[in-house]
Structures are given as structure tokens and as C-alpha cells.
Length: 267
Image (cartoon, rainbow, N blue to C red):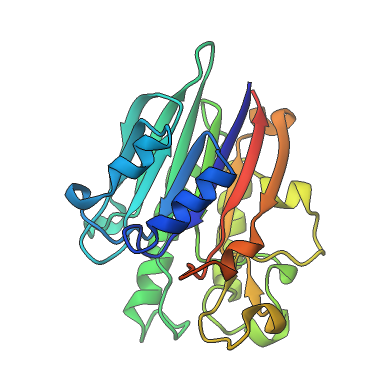
């Protein structure tokens, strides 16, 4: 079967449900992973998604901040939530997709942004981000996963030189500092994960998934960053069947500053 998985930092799922519906109507993926849903579980908009055929929904939310969700046409064999850094933040939800003869573990992550100052000694938010990454390294960066695994989400780091509009200008800007980029790549390679996006669009071609709200004309300025990622375990590498970034979604009505990324696997 062809399994399609999308990831999208939606920046408030209740506010932007119209464009979630717009996306799913035009791109009826099997699984959609959302980050920064910004709503407690009790207020998550289940009905519009179920009307579109997404009967299986795993959510981990909190009021006004963070929040992640996996909405799926594929049933779940298990669900999981991890509490990183003992903060109680809703930054991870995981499921095992039941594909009949096989199963795929899917983890949806929202890594802390890290604030503005890339110095953990004076910026608690950056210290939190580095601690979060350390926990990720211990969890998934110590060798290949036991089962077929996909990791997606807003990882809030643009790891490669051409994952940002200007490597030189952003070297000291949170999301592209060496300590972040080197740590994220160490986690990915330590876990043996394939960078699905770069498998299909090789470096050094520019690749972005986020454009700031601050730009008067985001498309003309094109000062983007690749903050959203899809990783696959080595056993899924031969099944990779495609990837697309829906850049036009950045120009939809009341958009998120991130756009959807879709990955496809021939399982």
C-alpha cells in the first residue's frame, strides 16, 4: 500500500481549521501530524476531521501553548506520550500504525523554539531546547529503532547550510547555530534515520518550510528556513516513494507561518 504522512505546524488548530480542511480536501493523506495545536484535549476540533474520514485521532494538548496531534485514516495499535524535561509540556505524541501485515511506529514532535539568545547561561529557553535535544538523543539517537519508524515534526532547527536563506547571516541565530545543527544531525545519524526530504531534494538545493510573519511579502523576500522534518528508519529507506512541500499554503487565508510537508512510502 502507498502510505502518505503529512506534518504541519498549524499554529492553533481551532483558529486554522478551515485551512486544515482545505489541505485535506485537496491532499487526502492517510495521516496528518500537527504541531502547536494550542488547545486542551477537550476542545480539540474532532468533528470536522471525522467528517473527512479521519476516525483515528491521538492528541496531546494544553491550553494556549504547544500541543501535538495525529489524525489518521489508519487505525492505531498503540498510542504514547512522552514528557520531555519533566515540564509537563505537550510536545510529543506517538502511535503505532496498524497496516495489517505490518506496523509502523510514528512519532510527532514539537521541539522548543529556544528564544532569541543562543546562550544557555542567560537564556532559559535555549537551555531547555538543548536539554530537550539531549533527551531525544538518549531516546532515539542511540542506534536503529527495533521497528519500522517515522519521526516527524517541527524540530525548530534548520540543520544544513542550504536549509536557510543565508547560512552566514543565521549562524548566530537560534535554529541554525552550530550547537543545534550538529546536535540534531548527531541524533538523526545516531539513530540511523534517513532525512526523507533531503533524499528527494538533495543538498545543496535550497529547501524551506517556514517563512516569518514579519516579512511584508514572504514570497518575494523568500527568507525561509527548513524547520519541519521527516525522518525514516533504515528499513523504510527502500520504500520511500515521494515528498512534497506545499509552499503555496503559506499564502492561504490566515496561514500558519509553516507549510505542510507530505512524505509517501510504498509499504
